Amino acid sequence: MKIVLEHLTKKFISKHNKNEIVTAVNDFDFEIPDGKLVGLLGPSGCGKSTTLNLICGLEEPTSGKIFFGDLDVSKLPPENRGVGMVFQNYALYPHLTVRQNIMFPLENLKGADKLSKEVMEEKALEAAKLVQIEMLMDRRPSELSGGQQQRVAIARALVKTPGVLLLDEPLSNLDARLRLQTREQIRRIQKETGITTIFVTHDQEEAMSISDMIVVMSAGVLQQMGKPQEVYNDPINLFVAKFLGTPAINVFDGYIRDHGLYIGDDRIGERNVEDQEVYIGVRPEAFDPKENGSFKCKYDRTETTGRDTSIVCHNDKCISDEDIRAIISADEPVYINDGVITFDLKPNKVHVFSKKDESVIR
Image (cartoon, rainbow, N blue to C red):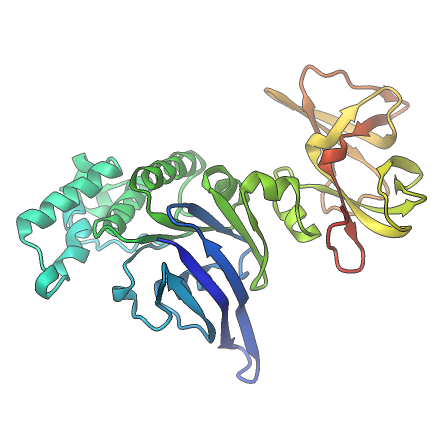
Protein backbone atom coordinates (compact mmCIF):
# COMPACT_ATOMS: atom_id res chain seq x y z
CA MET A 1 0.00 0.00 0.00
CA LYS A 2 1.48 3.31 -1.12
CA ILE A 3 1.01 6.16 1.37
CA VAL A 4 0.95 9.78 0.22
CA LEU A 5 0.90 12.78 2.55
CA GLU A 6 -0.16 16.02 0.84
CA HIS A 7 0.68 19.23 2.73
CA LEU A 8 -0.25 17.51 5.99
CA THR A 9 -0.39 19.88 8.97
CA LYS A 10 -1.47 19.38 12.57
CA LYS A 11 -1.83 22.23 15.07
CA PHE A 12 -2.71 22.01 18.76
CA ILE A 13 -3.67 24.53 21.40
CA SER A 14 -0.80 24.63 23.89
CA LYS A 15 -1.47 22.88 27.20
CA HIS A 16 0.40 25.64 29.02
CA ASN A 17 -1.04 28.65 27.22
CA LYS A 18 -4.49 28.50 25.60
CA ASN A 19 -3.62 31.49 23.44
CA GLU A 20 -0.64 29.69 21.92
CA ILE A 21 -0.90 27.42 18.88
CA VAL A 22 1.66 24.62 18.57
CA THR A 23 2.40 23.21 15.11
CA ALA A 24 3.31 19.56 15.64
CA VAL A 25 3.43 18.64 11.93
CA ASN A 26 4.13 21.38 9.43
CA ASP A 27 3.24 20.93 5.73
CA PHE A 28 4.41 17.33 5.27
CA ASP A 29 4.48 16.45 1.58
CA PHE A 30 6.00 13.10 0.67
CA GLU A 31 5.28 9.60 -0.61
CA ILE A 32 6.02 6.26 1.05
CA PRO A 33 6.37 3.56 -1.63
CA ASP A 34 4.38 0.33 -1.46
CA GLY A 35 6.00 -2.48 0.49
CA LYS A 36 8.80 -0.43 2.04
CA LEU A 37 9.92 -0.03 5.65
CA VAL A 38 10.28 3.66 6.43
CA GLY A 39 11.80 5.07 9.62
CA LEU A 40 10.40 8.33 11.00
CA LEU A 41 13.37 9.72 12.85
CA GLY A 42 13.99 12.73 15.04
CA PRO A 43 14.47 13.98 18.60
CA SER A 44 11.72 13.87 21.21
CA GLY A 45 8.96 16.37 20.45
CA CYS A 46 9.71 16.64 16.73
CA GLY A 47 6.22 15.42 15.70
CA LYS A 48 6.97 11.87 14.56
CA SER A 49 4.38 10.16 16.82
CA THR A 50 1.80 12.79 15.84
CA THR A 51 2.50 11.97 12.19
CA LEU A 52 1.92 8.29 12.94
CA ASN A 53 -1.33 9.09 14.76
CA LEU A 54 -2.50 11.14 11.77
CA ILE A 55 -1.77 8.25 9.40
CA CYS A 56 -3.65 5.72 11.54
CA GLY A 57 -6.57 8.10 12.26
CA LEU A 58 -6.11 8.70 15.97
CA GLU A 59 -5.59 12.39 15.16
CA GLU A 60 -7.40 14.47 12.54
CA PRO A 61 -5.28 16.78 10.40
CA THR A 62 -5.72 20.53 10.65
CA SER A 63 -5.13 20.68 6.91
CA GLY A 64 -3.79 18.48 4.14
CA LYS A 65 -4.68 14.98 3.00
CA ILE A 66 -3.61 11.37 3.52
CA PHE A 67 -3.93 8.79 0.74
CA PHE A 68 -3.65 5.00 0.97
CA GLY A 69 -3.08 4.15 -2.66
CA ASP A 70 -5.66 6.28 -4.50
CA LEU A 71 -8.08 6.39 -1.56
CA ASP A 72 -8.32 9.59 0.49
CA VAL A 73 -8.47 8.34 4.10
CA SER A 74 -8.12 11.76 5.75
CA LYS A 75 -11.62 11.56 7.28
CA LEU A 76 -11.89 7.80 7.73
CA PRO A 77 -12.01 6.45 11.32
CA PRO A 78 -9.07 4.24 12.37
CA GLU A 79 -11.05 0.98 12.21
CA ASN A 80 -11.80 1.56 8.51
CA ARG A 81 -8.25 2.34 7.39
CA GLY A 82 -6.87 -1.20 7.42
CA VAL A 83 -3.89 -0.35 9.61
CA GLY A 84 -2.14 -2.37 12.29
CA MET A 85 -0.73 -0.34 15.18
CA VAL A 86 1.97 -1.36 17.67
CA PHE A 87 2.25 1.03 20.61
CA GLN A 88 5.30 1.87 22.70
CA ASN A 89 3.84 0.23 25.83
CA TYR A 90 2.52 -2.84 23.90
CA ALA A 91 -1.05 -2.35 25.33
CA LEU A 92 -1.62 -6.07 25.97
CA TYR A 93 -4.59 -7.24 28.04
CA PRO A 94 -3.06 -8.72 31.23
CA HIS A 95 -5.98 -11.09 31.96
CA LEU A 96 -5.92 -12.66 28.48
CA THR A 97 -3.56 -15.32 27.15
CA VAL A 98 -1.25 -14.70 24.23
CA ARG A 99 -3.74 -16.48 21.96
CA GLN A 100 -6.63 -14.35 23.21
CA ASN A 101 -4.62 -11.13 22.86
CA ILE A 102 -3.77 -11.94 19.25
CA MET A 103 -7.34 -13.00 18.45
CA PHE A 104 -8.90 -9.89 20.02
CA PRO A 105 -9.03 -7.76 16.81
CA LEU A 106 -10.71 -10.66 14.98
CA GLU A 107 -13.38 -11.06 17.64
CA ASN A 108 -14.53 -7.49 16.97
CA LEU A 109 -15.31 -8.16 13.31
CA LYS A 110 -19.01 -7.83 12.50
CA GLY A 111 -21.45 -8.86 9.77
CA ALA A 112 -19.99 -10.45 6.66
CA ASP A 113 -16.46 -10.14 8.07
CA LYS A 114 -17.26 -12.15 11.21
CA LEU A 115 -15.12 -15.27 11.57
CA SER A 116 -15.68 -18.60 13.26
CA LYS A 117 -13.65 -19.42 16.36
CA GLU A 118 -11.73 -22.09 14.43
CA VAL A 119 -10.70 -19.62 11.72
CA MET A 120 -9.72 -17.01 14.32
CA GLU A 121 -7.53 -19.53 16.16
CA GLU A 122 -5.94 -20.58 12.87
CA LYS A 123 -5.15 -16.96 11.94
CA ALA A 124 -3.79 -16.26 15.45
CA LEU A 125 -1.47 -19.27 15.17
CA GLU A 126 -0.25 -18.10 11.75
CA ALA A 127 0.54 -14.65 13.15
CA ALA A 128 2.26 -16.19 16.19
CA LYS A 129 4.43 -18.37 13.95
CA LEU A 130 5.41 -15.34 11.92
CA VAL A 131 6.88 -13.70 15.05
CA GLN A 132 8.08 -17.05 16.47
CA ILE A 133 5.98 -17.19 19.66
CA GLU A 134 3.69 -20.11 18.79
CA MET A 135 4.98 -22.03 21.82
CA LEU A 136 3.76 -19.27 24.19
CA MET A 137 0.08 -19.19 23.20
CA ASP A 138 -1.30 -20.20 26.60
CA ARG A 139 0.81 -17.81 28.69
CA ARG A 140 -0.31 -14.44 29.97
CA PRO A 141 1.68 -11.20 29.44
CA SER A 142 3.07 -11.26 32.99
CA GLU A 143 4.77 -14.57 32.17
CA LEU A 144 6.61 -13.12 29.15
CA SER A 145 9.83 -11.17 28.71
CA GLY A 146 9.73 -7.66 27.25
CA GLY A 147 10.81 -8.93 23.86
CA GLN A 148 8.14 -11.63 23.86
CA GLN A 149 5.46 -9.09 24.81
CA GLN A 150 6.60 -6.93 21.93
CA ARG A 151 6.22 -9.82 19.52
CA VAL A 152 2.70 -10.52 20.81
CA ALA A 153 1.81 -6.90 20.09
CA ILE A 154 3.21 -7.23 16.56
CA ALA A 155 1.30 -10.49 15.99
CA ARG A 156 -1.93 -8.82 17.13
CA ALA A 157 -1.32 -5.98 14.67
CA LEU A 158 -0.64 -8.44 11.83
CA VAL A 159 -3.50 -10.88 12.43
CA LYS A 160 -6.00 -8.83 10.37
CA THR A 161 -3.53 -8.66 7.46
CA PRO A 162 -3.37 -4.85 7.44
CA GLY A 163 -2.35 -2.84 4.39
CA VAL A 164 -0.16 -0.64 6.61
CA LEU A 165 1.79 -1.51 9.77
CA LEU A 166 2.63 1.34 12.16
CA LEU A 167 5.12 0.98 15.03
CA ASP A 168 5.51 3.77 17.60
CA GLU A 169 8.95 3.48 19.29
CA PRO A 170 8.44 -0.30 19.67
CA LEU A 171 11.91 -1.01 21.07
CA SER A 172 12.28 1.75 23.66
CA ASN A 173 11.39 -0.48 26.63
CA LEU A 174 13.89 -3.24 25.78
CA ASP A 175 17.48 -3.68 26.86
CA ALA A 176 20.31 -3.36 24.34
CA ARG A 177 20.52 -7.04 23.34
CA LEU A 178 16.75 -7.41 23.00
CA ARG A 179 16.57 -4.20 20.96
CA LEU A 180 19.02 -5.66 18.48
CA GLN A 181 17.19 -8.99 18.28
CA THR A 182 13.74 -7.43 18.00
CA ARG A 183 14.66 -4.92 15.30
CA GLU A 184 16.03 -7.82 13.25
CA GLN A 185 12.72 -9.61 13.80
CA ILE A 186 10.78 -6.54 12.64
CA ARG A 187 12.86 -6.38 9.47
CA ARG A 188 12.38 -10.09 8.80
CA ILE A 189 8.61 -9.89 9.34
CA GLN A 190 8.30 -6.86 7.08
CA LYS A 191 10.27 -8.58 4.33
CA GLU A 192 8.17 -11.76 4.60
CA THR A 193 4.81 -9.98 4.61
CA GLY A 194 5.62 -7.13 2.22
CA ILE A 195 3.44 -4.80 4.30
CA THR A 196 4.19 -1.08 4.02
CA THR A 197 5.62 -0.31 7.46
CA ILE A 198 6.33 2.98 9.25
CA PHE A 199 8.64 2.74 12.22
CA VAL A 200 8.94 5.69 14.63
CA THR A 201 12.14 6.05 16.67
CA HIS A 202 14.50 8.66 18.08
CA ASP A 203 17.38 6.15 17.80
CA GLN A 204 19.14 6.84 14.51
CA GLU A 205 21.09 3.55 14.63
CA GLU A 206 17.81 1.59 14.75
CA ALA A 207 16.30 3.54 11.89
CA MET A 208 19.37 3.29 9.66
CA SER A 209 19.91 -0.42 10.28
CA ILE A 210 16.48 -1.72 9.19
CA SER A 211 14.80 1.00 7.09
CA ASP A 212 14.56 1.14 3.31
CA MET A 213 14.11 4.90 3.68
CA ILE A 214 14.36 7.35 6.56
CA VAL A 215 12.49 10.60 7.14
CA VAL A 216 14.43 12.98 9.40
CA MET A 217 12.24 15.47 11.29
CA SER A 218 12.85 18.49 13.49
CA ALA A 219 10.22 20.70 15.18
CA GLY A 220 7.45 19.33 12.99
CA VAL A 221 9.32 19.99 9.75
CA LEU A 222 10.60 17.34 7.36
CA GLN A 223 14.34 17.93 7.02
CA GLN A 224 15.40 15.18 4.62
CA MET A 225 14.09 11.90 3.19
CA GLY A 226 16.03 9.18 1.40
CA LYS A 227 17.91 5.92 1.70
CA PRO A 228 19.71 5.80 5.08
CA GLN A 229 23.26 5.71 3.75
CA GLU A 230 22.55 8.39 1.15
CA VAL A 231 21.19 10.75 3.81
CA TYR A 232 24.20 10.00 6.04
CA ASN A 233 26.67 10.59 3.20
CA ASP A 234 24.97 13.72 1.86
CA PRO A 235 23.11 15.58 4.66
CA ILE A 236 21.07 18.52 3.44
CA ASN A 237 21.81 20.68 6.49
CA LEU A 238 23.75 20.80 9.73
CA PHE A 239 20.87 19.38 11.80
CA VAL A 240 20.73 16.20 9.74
CA ALA A 241 24.51 15.86 9.79
CA LYS A 242 24.61 16.18 13.58
CA PHE A 243 21.63 13.90 14.20
CA LEU A 244 22.92 10.95 12.16
CA GLY A 245 26.05 9.10 13.16
CA THR A 246 27.60 7.45 16.22
CA PRO A 247 29.93 8.92 17.38
CA ALA A 248 28.43 12.21 16.26
CA ILE A 249 29.97 14.35 13.56
CA ASN A 250 32.66 16.80 14.73
CA VAL A 251 31.69 20.42 13.97
CA PHE A 252 34.18 23.28 13.56
CA ASP A 253 34.12 26.99 12.90
CA GLY A 254 35.82 27.44 9.56
CA TYR A 255 36.03 29.63 6.49
CA ILE A 256 36.55 29.59 2.74
CA ARG A 257 39.23 31.86 1.27
CA ASP A 258 40.48 31.83 -2.32
CA HIS A 259 38.72 28.47 -2.83
CA GLY A 260 40.60 26.95 0.12
CA LEU A 261 38.68 25.38 3.04
CA TYR A 262 40.23 26.25 6.40
CA ILE A 263 39.92 25.29 10.06
CA GLY A 264 42.01 27.93 11.81
CA ASP A 265 45.27 28.16 9.87
CA ASP A 266 44.99 24.63 8.52
CA ARG A 267 43.92 24.28 4.90
CA ILE A 268 42.02 20.99 4.89
CA GLY A 269 40.53 21.02 1.40
CA GLU A 270 38.91 23.06 -1.33
CA ARG A 271 35.50 24.56 -2.09
CA ASN A 272 34.93 26.41 -5.35
CA VAL A 273 32.55 29.01 -3.87
CA GLU A 274 32.78 32.61 -2.70
CA ASP A 275 34.77 33.53 0.41
CA GLN A 276 32.70 33.18 3.59
CA GLU A 277 32.62 31.85 7.13
CA VAL A 278 31.19 28.33 7.41
CA TYR A 279 30.55 25.41 9.68
CA ILE A 280 32.64 22.37 8.82
CA GLY A 281 31.40 18.90 9.79
CA VAL A 282 33.98 16.10 9.89
CA ARG A 283 32.79 12.53 10.36
CA PRO A 284 34.82 10.45 12.87
CA GLU A 285 35.84 8.07 10.07
CA ALA A 286 37.22 11.01 7.99
CA PHE A 287 40.49 11.24 9.95
CA ASP A 288 43.53 9.69 8.30
CA PRO A 289 46.63 9.90 10.57
CA LYS A 290 49.65 11.20 8.69
CA GLU A 291 53.10 12.22 9.93
CA ASN A 292 52.76 15.59 8.14
CA GLY A 293 49.00 15.82 7.88
CA SER A 294 47.19 19.05 6.99
CA PHE A 295 45.02 19.20 10.13
CA LYS A 296 46.53 19.51 13.61
CA CYS A 297 44.93 18.61 16.95
CA LYS A 298 46.08 18.36 20.56
CA TYR A 299 46.29 14.68 21.46
CA ASP A 300 44.41 13.54 24.58
CA ARG A 301 44.14 9.76 24.64
CA THR A 302 43.50 6.60 22.66
CA GLU A 303 40.59 4.23 23.32
CA THR A 304 40.70 0.80 21.67
CA THR A 305 37.46 -1.18 21.42
CA GLY A 306 38.26 -4.40 19.60
CA ARG A 307 38.39 -3.72 15.88
CA ASP A 308 38.54 0.08 16.03
CA THR A 309 40.61 2.70 17.76
CA SER A 310 39.10 5.99 18.88
CA ILE A 311 41.56 8.87 19.14
CA VAL A 312 40.31 11.60 21.45
CA CYS A 313 41.80 15.01 20.74
CA HIS A 314 41.07 18.76 20.81
CA ASN A 315 41.07 21.76 18.52
CA ASP A 316 40.22 25.34 19.51
CA LYS A 317 37.86 25.69 16.54
CA CYS A 318 35.74 22.68 17.48
CA ILE A 319 32.23 23.72 18.58
CA SER A 320 30.80 20.23 19.16
CA ASP A 321 29.49 19.44 22.61
CA GLU A 322 32.00 16.61 23.05
CA ASP A 323 35.70 15.98 22.37
CA ILE A 324 36.87 15.34 18.83
CA ARG A 325 36.75 11.62 18.11
CA ALA A 326 38.68 10.13 15.22
CA ILE A 327 37.85 6.50 14.40
CA ILE A 328 40.71 4.59 12.77
CA SER A 329 41.70 0.96 12.37
CA ALA A 330 43.40 -0.56 15.41
CA ASP A 331 46.28 -1.55 13.09
CA GLU A 332 46.89 1.97 11.79
CA PRO A 333 49.97 3.86 13.06
CA VAL A 334 49.48 7.14 14.93
CA TYR A 335 51.95 10.04 14.75
CA ILE A 336 52.23 12.27 17.82
CA ASN A 337 54.84 15.04 18.09
CA ASP A 338 55.04 17.20 21.24
CA GLY A 339 51.44 16.37 22.10
CA VAL A 340 50.17 17.23 18.61
CA ILE A 341 48.60 14.68 16.26
CA THR A 342 48.14 15.41 12.55
CA PHE A 343 45.64 14.07 10.05
CA ASP A 344 44.62 14.35 6.45
CA LEU A 345 40.82 14.45 6.07
CA LYS A 346 38.92 12.30 3.56
CA PRO A 347 37.07 14.80 1.32
CA ASN A 348 33.87 12.73 0.99
CA LYS A 349 33.50 12.68 4.79
CA VAL A 350 33.85 16.45 5.20
CA HIS A 351 30.65 18.52 4.93
CA VAL A 352 30.44 22.31 4.72
CA PHE A 353 27.43 24.34 5.86
CA SER A 354 26.38 27.97 5.52
CA LYS A 355 26.50 30.06 8.70
CA LYS A 356 23.43 31.94 7.48
CA ASP A 357 20.92 29.09 7.38
CA GLU A 358 23.02 25.95 8.10
CA SER A 359 22.25 24.50 4.64
CA VAL A 360 24.90 22.39 2.94
CA ILE A 361 27.45 24.01 0.61
CA ARG A 362 28.32 21.40 -1.99
